[in-house]
Length: 243
Image (cartoon, one colour):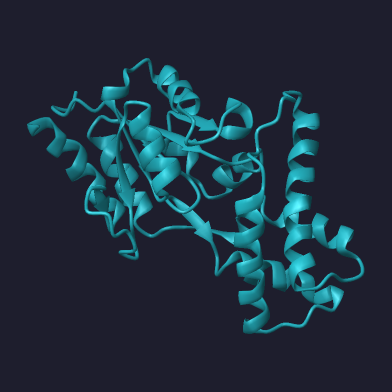
């Protein structure tokens, strides 16, 4: 076993392991072209800003429903409200309901997602050194086809996603559920993510160690441990053995 006290390394998904190709606004705009929405970089940026605002105001995506089909219906309605709010801000158009079906389905495929270049070598290194790997993500049920299509499942021992966990980060409940799958204590796990509240504060409040992936150098709080490249994770984990 590794000398480090860490036995499991958890990763956030979107923004950490993979990302939208281009931007959400660009994807929304591309699928809206056949409905007559004008194509321009200015429109894409308006959509990005409207998406950020609508997403920030949305309620947590946690639903009491557990039956798969009913759960997917709840998720679809949740996303419909967000996408509708986006275009309400920038301009509604005829055929929106059909458009939503198109774009909602697109986000369940690898067509609009891309794995970060530093991911495969990082995961391969951690597995080779004996660490268990898990996902802790605020995502809906579309996560699973995306995960398979991006060929990520081969590296991971567990997946804990908010849609089936009944909790969203930063709630400690989702972290505790993930820990239970590996039968480890919080002190034996590290979480890597890209969002300060959900990933760093959520994980540390639940008792895990945590580090932020800050590829753009945007974090200004010196008290938060950050890395610029996922290839640094193995060094972070093994450096904890000397603490």
